[in-house]
Length: 607
Ligand code: G6P
Image 1 (cartoon, rainbow, N blue to C red):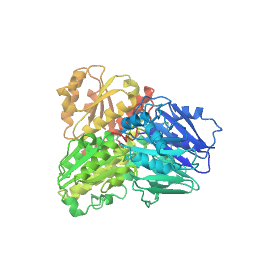
Image 2 (image 1 turned 180 degrees about the horizontal axis):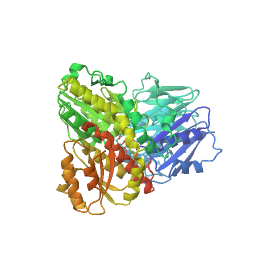
Image 3 (image 1 turned 45 degrees about the vertical axis):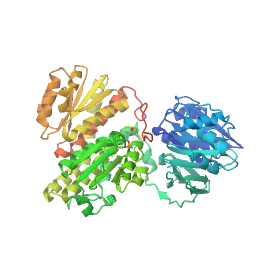
Image 4 (image 1 turned 60 degrees about the vertical axis):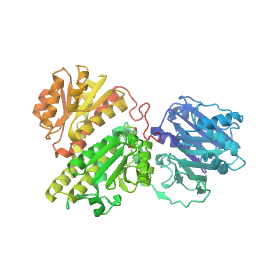
């Protein structure tokens, strides 16, 4: 959740750390701090608030060629200057930044306190600094090794010692840590964007590893002190991709990138000629794919909604029983793993703790789990038994948009592949593939409606409650629309199956509670129009997202946004875009911080 960055090299560390933290701000951002080493001491500057608040109090003449930085998303201890990282030992010589949660910190704290160590913060992380101090006898690396052996929980840690200039020691268990290799300089960070401006050469640190870094060298060992040979990877992302490129917000940029990002997800994979999908990363032969009798999808947040669409498709089109489940629930309910089942762990970041731990639990039980991830080299991508990258490019805004439509694309491709191996004819496959190939163009047309959607947001953004209602394959899209609005505008919104409202939510309807209905021209259209009329009869305001030319719906509802006609299975792509834009413009109307909504983080690496 928190972001960490470390630097050693020939440049002034403070600038590099602040710039790295700025790029990580989307991960967690209630406070931030840096620690810079120089002349036998570590200068710590930390503050509640944004990176810009921190920047204001960093003296321009702060010198030092190595240091660490942190942007915090509070878990233990309130948000204030003292609880911000870096944390130090009593001498102030050792400084650490930590991402994760130390579950046994109370026990460690009690023991250290009884030995005379004085704690000044409410955080779990401070124990790390004191533990290192208790073991330190001139070699930071050794003390860190002894320390992490006692830690229970999750951590990505970077530590420095004032008397070991130019050296960073990092350790990882469950929270990401990546080493960046530059020329006469090295970086450690929780996330690639923090260092992308400086290098594309990276080494992914694995759980249980400890890495010692100087400007010209790095050495990685495991907990048994064995040296580990690491491979250097090349990051594919470009710096421009993590910048706003003329847009006001990352979310706005990412919504607009969807025609291109959907295209990227299908490039080289959608085969219209043979009416099938090619997904090389699955690591499964045709025979193995044919033997699959059940598919299960696990995910959290927006990725879960994509998984729900995936499960609808796989069952209704490929005729394979399929369920999507929240990963946080899967882990603790002792799931049954059947031999012919295939699992998908869907995660944009590839680091979500709920999904990662559920995946590991399933793997322990013998399951084959494939990842559908965006971040290359992320933990889920590496630990899964195969999978598919969605290739959205970096998604920076907390509220996920382009990753959702790219995750959908992968499910459509997989459905096509599986369906064609079973009962789907060449003709049906061609129709499906053609419709899918047209989606990027159609999404562009929906984006052209943004001015209309902006007006709608002006009209409705003062409402206190919203309902988002859809059916069939569009039901998860309704959930996603409600989630988007909640996340960035803080307006209460519920997503429901339109059929279900009569079993409860209709009690909420009055002239002040608008409902957003998703009405496609599929077999459920008439039923959903009946649901819509039930709301109108109770004086509820209705906004419809419907298909171009649907006069009947246009006449009944208060407002309408239309999307192009398509194959009925493709509507989730077209229906979600107006909902993303609606949430975006409502948030702007209400003056919210769109890219960094309160209390939320992009990558949730704690349970
Ligand atoms: C967080 C983010 C959501 C995201 C969810 C799952 O809650 O704020 O936007 O959908 O995590 O993230 P993942 O990276 O696993 O897709």
